[in-house]
Image (cartoon, rainbow, N blue to C red; front, side, top):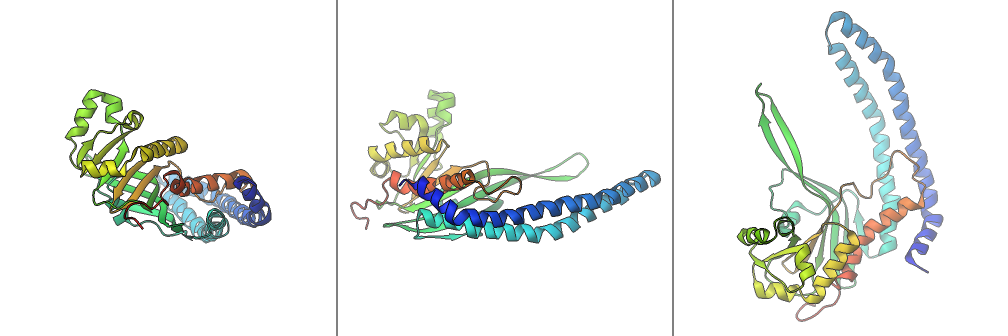
Length: 322
């Protein structure tokens, strides 16, 4: 029986009844939103009329703010409970289905120090958030991953002296770390090759000028070279890490994910970033959640990083790695 068949059996026997109960909570939240929206219409209309009469927008502003605050404080506890139960009853069950040796912490994340340590992104971080932390061992390989959203900010002052803060995403997606199957002391970075694709020979020149992560490493795999640019603090050891077999497997994983994955090898650990534009593993508020297709999507996203162990053959312990 295939994994999808087993997943469907799990859905029908365990998840569907839970989702039906959760769906009732979801519908109750939507009904509350509708009710408070209706209750707010009359006061807002009256406040608009008063504001027009006295030529002052303050009554309307106060009414809208008060309506929003009342709605928030009434609805937020319901949403938080629905959110918590979904994570515990659905996402945890899917993770255990994938591998029973993994532990799941819905509100935790991989630390900012680990994100910084991986060295894939060098922009200073002003805000760092995340959730859905998964950790454990698959055979002899320790892994951990979570959703991460790292941002930086800029502050500007306009001609009237007003300060404006703008937030920009450094990375949003899954940060994955695993114990690598080889010992090494160097730092090696496998990054998306955008410069050479855009500027050709000039792009290579620009890459060589970038010394922040070590020296540019040119490898024999032409397809790998066209997709990635590699920097390392040690030419020899970087080739020891990036064997021809591993380069093929990284290419395979990139094709499988269809995303601009980036990797680093630091302190005998592998780090991988998989960018996503959406929040993963989150409960839906609008639209029926009792749907096997949604479960398949959660399963596919979770399996993606866990399957990396097998794809890159990280459980094979060679040389001095035990």
